[in-house]
Length: 158
Image (cartoon, rainbow, N blue to C red):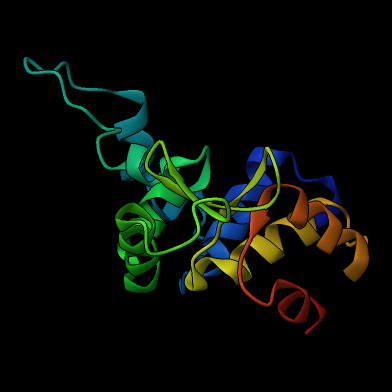
């Protein structure tokens, strides 16, 4: 399986995991028989365990728009923009704060989601890789359909 064969969900995980530093070590089954035992002989628990409590946070970072809402809340420069929008200091025809997200509107009725600095490279990788490495201009066009950040043309061309 190569990058072209990835399903969209696997591609999102693949992109997310690229930012992490880890090592995958293969171990033969005979060396990890305790794992096989545990998977075949489950213990009935009296108390239900929520295995996905922390996993849902990770999934939300990758799928949907909640990852962007969290990202915008964690970046001081975006929070500064949001506070200026809410106080009326910035042009409300250009910046819009709606449903907990900051948008930038270039054309009327076509707002683009504002991407914080730390997520721009991940967004670029995701769009470039998921679209089978279509090239700079097509990647720029796809990103510009939904997202905006300062000097995005220059960033993508680099």
